[in-house]
Image (tube, rainbow, N blue to C red; front, top):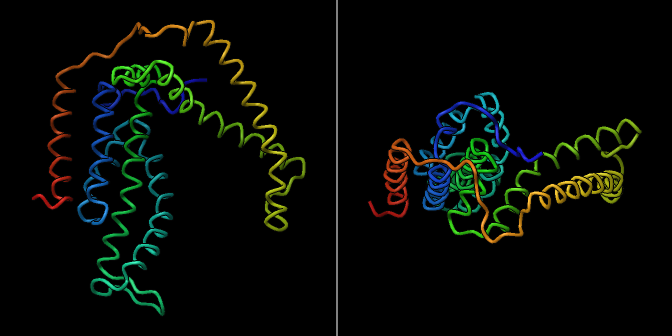
Length: 258
């Protein structure tokens, strides 16, 4: 139940210490923020996040699906941000009232990478790190045991919530429930037979989980102990140094320090 997003594989990212993976994901976030107004500068960050997602062992197919689905968001950001900066730069595409300039494209792509690069990076982190080790990493950072445990449980329950919602929707559709008919209020009202069973099912799962945690004495001690703790290796040191140099240069480039 608490496997969460983790996928059991043998990959380069699976073999890394969770602390260095969290450092890498944080650097991706920082570099994306520093280059958010220039897609040309943030593009290497996006490519590195995609490469990491592919190397995480989840398969190039799933990575391609995530990238394809993000193209819709790219179209939306292009229309919004390119429209806001239509008066800056040279026009690239003009169709009626729609005027897209080179500056608008750079800003729009930068905003797109600002969202998607950290998303791909943290997906890679959770896909390649066991929830057990995620909690251990957060505690090593100084987070209280109760908070780290609650965070890991919340993240781990996301796939369960999605699956439960999908199952209830399929069952209700077989019973004749139409979710795409009527006015907006009617459609919202049609979701009531879905929300109630989903909440009821999740409350049942949470109750069972609370009994399991109580039987293991979770939350009653100030400091949680771990039987299997990751060990920092030379591979982690090399990866951390390369990440600091690579994203440090991009951050300095984005902040116009270079």
